[in-house]
Length: 216
Image (cartoon, rainbow, N blue to C red; front, side, top):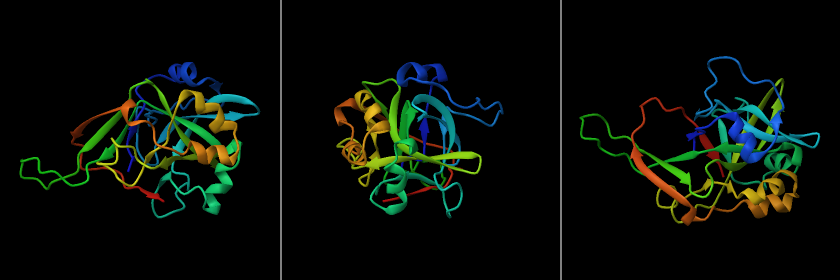
């Protein structure tokens, strides 16, 4: 679930909506594509450093390739390895997005003689043109890696993915997520109101989707 997401904007838009400045140099290589987020790819992430909120670029796999598959989304913040990160404000982050994807529950026959595949269902947040997903990160070596936090699905997401959805934060909750207590984190791990989301699809992707998983 939610191993596809998009940010259709510019870094200046993130700074305007979420606040901050660049904490690290911008990537200069042509492999960095922040508009299309897949497991292991790099994405814009907002975090705080020495009391300053700022923009960074991290890899979407909090295990840094040390697990058999990318760890992109995490649900159970009570597990010791995740609580150790989520309990520390310095390891929390906001992941700015403009859309997120869930796949259809079952493969769909496209009528072209090829094997049925699952379609992409794209969700948009109506009251935020750029929205922040709750996350946490860690540094391994000289690189930084993050995961998004998931929660129970709302009524719009549940028919497509009944297990979970990403934790979209309201704008008033950004500071609380970044600086609050562990109890604040647990309280904010909740579904975004269904009436503030829209969905379109199914959109059929290529047949070369990256593999990923989530641990609940």
